[in-house]
Length: 175
Image 1 (cartoon, rainbow, N blue to C red):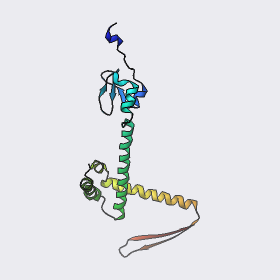
Image 2: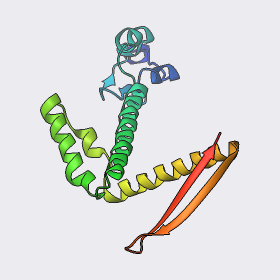
Image 3: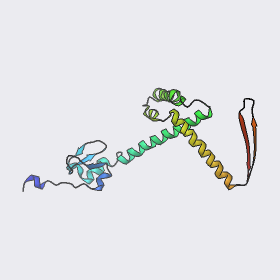
């Protein structure tokens, strides 16, 4: 028998996926590491060696969830900044024109870190406007739910100011 026929070839299994390996494109008998982007030899593909060398490293799943966590924090920060812009009655373009560059400069200077998350934070005029609409709609829904669950009374009054601006005053009393 020749040495080529004696060579043992490892079959791909789902066990390799746990460590972040897939079959290589050019040769399905070899494993390709998604994290370090290298092909492993047949000797390296033994499950004992894989567990010993690759079990403690970050898996592809943990990398995706870590990235997802950054996106969620960036999105939450965007909502909080949109709320502050609405509270102070500022123009919605201030988010991209002043706030975002300010945060970026602070992160670079104070922490010495990359500001990639700040750059991806959505703070455009349309985004801030849409977020404010979503938050006001949410407050309205919460109020309606609370009023539907309790007994309440409503007192309303309308008046017109000197500059023909209408004001509607509403008092809601509930237990």
